[in-house]
Each structure stands twice: as C-alpha cells, then as structure tokens.
Image 1 (cartoon, one colour):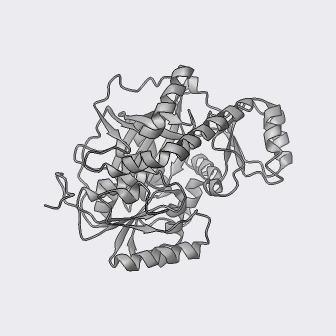
Image 2 (image 1 turned 30 degrees about the vertical axis):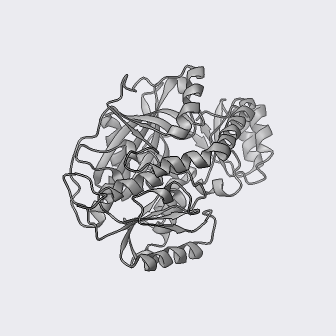
Image 3 (image 1 turned 180 degrees about the horizontal axis):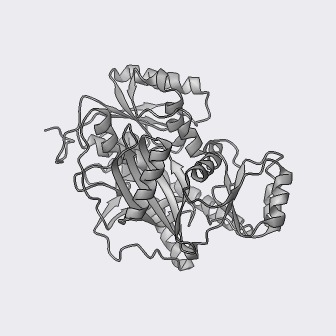
Length: 423
C-alpha cells in the first residue's frame, strides 16, 4: 500500500491526478491544503498552483508538485487558459480540476471546450457559475425559482442610492455586487452593515456614478442563525454527497470566513439545496451560505459558491467521502459510496478562531443549534501525518499575520460608524 493511502471502503483511481486551481493571491488558504490531504491520503497524485514555493500548500507531504504561478484572478482569460494548458502538458495525463475560488470556477466553466482534452471537470452551462457568484445573478435566480433570499436593491447610479436611502428601513447591508471585484477596487470591504441614511450617503460618495454594490435587507444576528451546505452533484444534478452544518464563529465577526462550525443534521435545508441545484441544472461541488430568519421561519440563501469551500473538511461521511473525493470518484467513473454525515463533528481554523472566539464572547452571541460537546474535531491546519503546512502557516503569520488581523480589526472599528460587520 502506498505511503499516503488510508483505509476507506472504496478505491480511488490513482492513475488520475488532481490539480488544485486557485487564481486569487492569498497564500494562507486552508481549503487547498485540505483538498491536497483528502485526495493525497487516498494515493491520488495531487498538484497545486501556488503563489510561491513557501506556501502551506506547497509544504504538504501529500503534494506531488507545486506549480508556482503568481496570479491575481484579474488576468486576461486567454492568459489563464494557456497557463492551465501548459501545466496540463507538464502533468502529462488527464487531470481532475479542483477550483478553490470563483475566478477558477468561472474560467473553467466558460472555457470548457478549450480545457476538455487535458482536464476532467463537471460540465455545466458556461454562464451559470459566473451568475451564481454574482450577488445580483444569485438574487435573480432565487426569485426565479422561489428560493428565499434577503430583499435587495441594485443601484445603477448615485441617484438610485439617494432614492433608496429615502425609503429604506435601516439598518441595511452593502456588499460588492460581483465576486471578482474583491481583486480590483471593491466599493465596500466585505459585508458592511449601515445603520443610518446619513451613513449610507457618506459611504456612497466613494462609489462613483456606477455603484458596484447590492443594498440588502439586514437579518439581525439576534434573530438569525448561519447555516452551511456543502455538496457534490453529478451530471444530472443529482446529489452524490450532501452535508449540512451550522456556523458558530467567523472572522471578521458575523460576516467573514468560517472560523468554527459543527455538522448538524438538517433535512429541510438539504432538501432546499437539492431542489434549487436541480432547478438550475448545476453539477459539481457547491458551498452554500444561508441564514435562518427566526422572524419568518425561512432559510434565506446569501451565497452560492460554485466550487469547493475552504471549510469542506468539516464534512465527511462514515464511508470516508467528502465533496472533493466524491467529485474525483464520479469523474473517474467510480461509484460514490453512500453514508451518513458525522453529526456533531467540529471544524476549527486555528489562526482565526481565537480572535473570533474573543469577539463573540464580548458580543454574547451564541448559536442555539451548536452541540454542547463535539463528537470530534477537524483542524484546518494541524495534522499529525502532515505537520509542515501548519508550521509554514505559523511562520508566515508571525509578523504579517498579526498585521493582517490588526487591519481586519481596524476595518471593523472604522465601519462601526456605518455598522460594518453584520449581514
């Protein structure tokens, strides 16, 4: 048995490698490390695109090779496609693509025919991932298919913002309309809660005549719960693996990346996600964020990420299947074993959960559906069989990481005047 094999009741195709594709510039990405470990432990050869040779992903013992290719996600599509094809030629055999950000997922979908000879990936409507990654596109799809989502406005001019401010019920939430804008010049820093008409107009002065924002109904955290769905769907949009969980903490607080979450069984939520994906005809891996609004008893879809989520390793069935393994099995013609999710299992992102924990304790916020005690814990970075990504993360965090957390804290403090941090 190979050094990196694990005992599971199925066999992955070790002749078909995988390539972790990330175009955004954020070296401390635990999701990529999780995907490398997940497939590598099955004996699948795993390659990854990395910003430099010293990222945590590049340090994993389960990585066959890192292709150092600094990108931002804003490059011309032709340049990125050619770069992927060049990597495919170097690997030398058909390879499963595992996108970890929207830029990668959208590029793969929109250039399927160019990439099909070198790579394996789920085939979808070429325009669907871009529409799902867009706040406006997702809102329109939800309305079209009867899926609850927060009410929203999409101002096309500064005058539209002023008109909205005259009639809106505050607080409201402002978000960047398109996912890709975060790599360029975002109108707002993440999810921004705005408490007053004056605060909105002051913030809007920097948006120009064509605001790239969505102004959305605020769902108060005191009356809401944050839920997540991770799933993999086959070619006919049938779920191959489906998991539900509740987010306990995020960083920045209440609006950022998952810092801690639990697996919680939620058949209603799983059914909602499966029906929506079937209606839109998506196949592949999805990461959904929903907020349960206790005021009306509805799960409202906030984000539909048409790719692997960074916290996907929270979810694994008792058959040893997670969404990345499910996709690799499916694309290589193997059956995906059925199994139950590990209810009560916990996921913790070590480098952001401590500040998140302190912030949540100060706010007094708790998640009612979080188990009192975890049945097990999956750490994002630290793994006994693969310690180097954790050590590399720590080394990169010592100075720049502290500065980054400080900047995030300052962003939250600056937003207090307009209410940054909710959503």
